[in-house]
Every structure is written in structure tokens, then in C-alpha cells.
Image 1: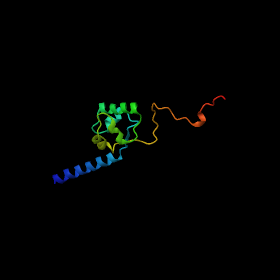
Image 2: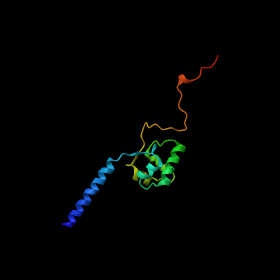
Image 3: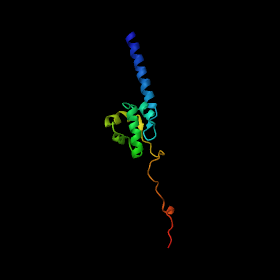
Image 4: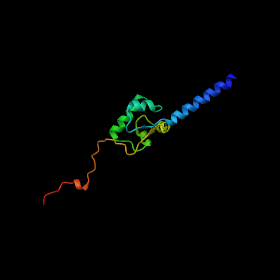
Length: 112
């Protein structure tokens, strides 16, 4: 039966694609390059990927995946479509323009 062979092949292919997609590691939107974002994300091309990088550089790291919707050209639908492909890693070493907090011991001692 040719019909059942084609259906079986399609089913196996679909299953393999699903398993490989689930096994894929998520991309961190705070550290990924524009090329990585373009390659991994759905409905995000080079221009939107660069807009994500520009927003990140101007405003600091994203604190949640939902904040991605603040980027011009990225809406909530795009965020939802990509939710399983992206993440914001807590504790990732990210440099920003903010000054580091100083401990009380680091304060200069004044003269009396």
C-alpha cells in the first residue's frame, strides 16, 4: 500500500522534527548576536534582530522574555511564537552602562 507508506514516513519525519526541536537549546536574548537571533527566532529577520541588540544596548539587559515586546517591531504575538526558543538567563554576566554598587567599606574616609 503506497498510501500507508507515505503516511508512515510523514509521521516518522514529523516525530523526529518535534524531538529535535524540543532538544534544541534556547537562545539567551541578553547574550545572543543578531545573527543567532535571526537564525533561531520565528518572524525575526536581520533588521528585527538588530533592533533587539540596539534595545539591549540602550536599555540594559532584558529581565524577562515579555520585555522583548518593548522592542520596536516586536509584538506580543512574536514573543509568544518564540517563547520556547528564547530565554533570559538569570545570573548571566552582562555588562551595562550602570555603575557598580559600592560597599560601605569602600567609602573614602574624610578628615576631621
